[in-house]
Image (tube, rainbow, N blue to C red; front, side, top):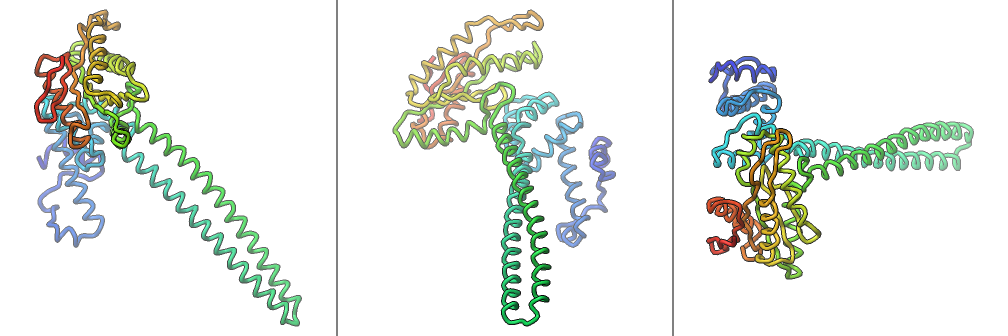
Length: 379
């Protein structure tokens, strides 16, 4: 692996030269004694070894997309990737370039590093503004002290003309200093407002799934927390459902990913038809959607969602790009009464397990989760 030509390409891409030979390694104690640049180089090469190993293991072509994905996965920059990869491996699906591109496309709008950079810049701008304000106060105080000193000098000095000249010099310098500070304050205010607008826009984008237009997983998790607290306070019913498109991989394999994207959009629109201020639909990831029902019992939520399931399954869809029938497009779902479980996370787990039970029982059906650990077949 040390002299693997592809791994060496990865290193060369980052300007780190050839393979890391045994004589270039260092113990933790030795690394600590190295100059900062040397220790950083060793750490960087170790990271690249892990990135290269991951890409080679899954036979993923090395490009900017796959390198960025592997980096964010291994370093934990985007903590969601580990869960997505584990689920992919659990389902025995390949980690390939197409899947990586899809995941990167889903998460690009809410790239954690981008948000962090914007936040850092905003905080720096606010900090600069605060320091400028502090400098203005300090300069004003210094000016007042100098002015007071010369005013006192006018009262005791017989050389009033000399003191007035000095006073004029101080006043002139202070005016110039004040002008500079005012310009800096105005610039800091403009930059702060601009960064705040960009940060607000980035946060909105971070909550949106750009393919379907639905809220994404991040937005749903924040919504679940709010709705759970509010429903508990008002003693409202609260149910959550995971919906997964049946045989979606076969749709992609037979009709292509563009057609698969159109199916995703169709299912998203179909589910969105039941959404209102008491029912929220989001894309949870991949071909999976999540629905949160406020004020409905599990049976009432089931009835609403099952009607949608039947409506979708009854349609006969055709791939308009090839005039090839899609066949039946359906989804399976697992539904859980949130307050029947110890907490929302347990309810989500129950709904997820009920979804898998629905898949195992033949798909195109909804299962209500049993908090005792069993599932209640409801369709």
